[in-house]
Length: 256
Ligand SMILES: Nc1ncnc2c1ncn2[C@@H]1O[C@H](COP(=O)(O)OP(=O)(O)OP(=O)(O)O)[C@@H](O)[C@H]1O
Ligand SMILES: [Mg+2]
Image (cartoon, rainbow, N blue to C red; front, side, top):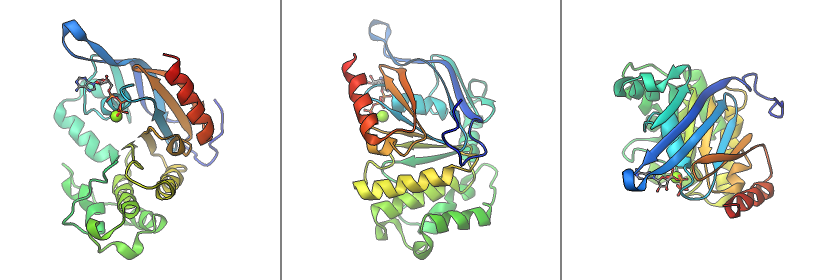
């Protein structure tokens, strides 16, 4: 175990793991294993990127980790819970309380202000739990949102909206944040700023981030990069430059 991510006292503590995870789609005649025997662990206090070509199984793996889809075989454990032992209701409660989500398209409620969006999850929980206001205030401050809390999403830039979405994903102190192409709708500079903030917020916290991306620049902000091809994890590396990640992605893609 290396210690290349020095900031977090939680680095090394596993927050989610899979064991021989497999998800098949299709009928008997044409079955595809979108995830084909993945055994992998994700740590607290670290941003892990999952990269790979289109169709390599990245989103399927993320959906299985979040309990949004169910494996054909194998197991997922998240924050100490074996997801296979939970019914849909318990999975939904676990998602509410222990997971946060950041999507490419921001997914903010247009009629609500930035602050109301950040506080939406605490209102919707099965067991509503008020946010820790000190943590919420520090998120708002570190994400540079203080001056825009009363604005609705249409009055915010894409980068500002994504920063609100990150505050919303982290405000209830989840165990894991799942981010699917979080910079997909942002220009390069804005995307970098957003990822830099996300990575800094996570290092030193007990939350782990799992980020799916096509983009080597986005992946270069991760503490660890997993590369998928044909449903398998074919490469695992510690933090790397965008150029090295791009070269490895190209190599993996042509190694078919
Ligand atoms: N609901 C589904 N029904 C049938 N096949 C599916 C389904 N979801 C995914 N697949 C197949 O599983 C494989 C992996 O898909 P997945 O969406 O996980 O890829 P991905 O790596 O996220 O791709 P992208 O980068 O394009 O988002 C693909 O071959 C896809 O067609
Ligand atoms: Mg996908």
